[in-house]
Length: 482
Image (cartoon, rainbow, N blue to C red; front, side):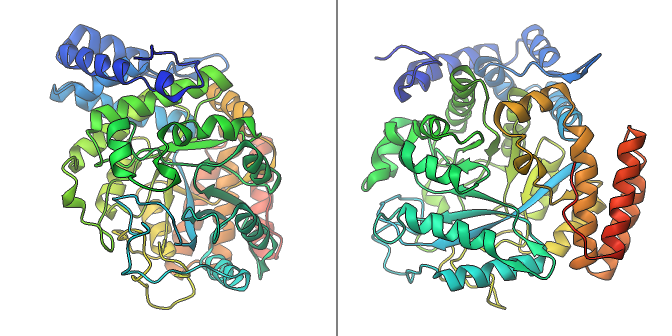
């Protein structure tokens, strides 16, 4: 059996089954060790310094102890510290994005995904460039500035050239005051050469869900197709970084296997990226298995309830304090509301998970990858965020100012990222309010902006932000950024 080595480039060594099992035993043995738990919680708590705020993060063993802990008052402390960390490094901003499904052609046999090759129930569809353009205009008319493009794995129908062409089309569409300023990419594991092409196309974050870190389960759940290769899939982030992509996004599909195993593997993967590349994951997503055509989530016997889901989210925030955390419209409004206070920093809004869904007046279901639980419009999501004290942010400035990878993380770790992100969020919110918001959302938004401008500590930054917002309100000038 391969020995555990976080600096190894081999999947079986940086995601060591033996180490995960030993960690779970350690966590079980110490889940009521209050002295140890208090030490771990104190380590996780953000500390103020002369240069800002710092956070130590947790090892996979420490984080697993907290996840296993069943002492109610300690769990409440986990939740409290998760909120402290989120506010310390991301403030009360929540970044908004939308997924754009390009094609549901796929050659894989994944048992949890309706796009699997043997599913004959769904119509297969691939967007033409004209259809991509129409989808982008529809998304711009909603107010979106950031997309995550999705496509099944099919070398014939969805080659890298098709993905690159779609990215170019997306960036080329300028409709009224709308622009998609950043495209994140969620496609199958590929080669260093192809990752380099994605980097050169100007993508933001490369996202790839591991689905499950349990190799035996992974092989069973991916019986056919190129995704069956566990090692190639698990090592994809290293190839992406070797191809020059600074920002990568991890995630597991909770419910496929036992959540404590998945959680440990996820934190170990983050540790591996930090150890090898000097920067951990830019984002971590926390999806759960959901119903879809040909897919019954009840057929997977590892589902987790909402309380466990909240605990997982909070423990990830303590373990990897500087990562962005994403919750999608897979989850209900109630679940998303709770997780916003436990570490989540990005949400999707107004999402449609079908190919070509945004141009249709009625939500189509025949090509959906999963059921959307939160079906509110983007305007409703923006209003909901503000009502709960969160600033809806459409900002993409860090990507376009070169604040990616270790440069972003060094700013985030010192707390300095707040000096530009807070005003950027307010300016992009003003753009949304002027160009897309309903009357009620607009009124609430400008009240929030007026209140939040007072919280910008630097007088000169506040003055510039105020002047820029006035220009947004009184002219067609857009895209101000620090």
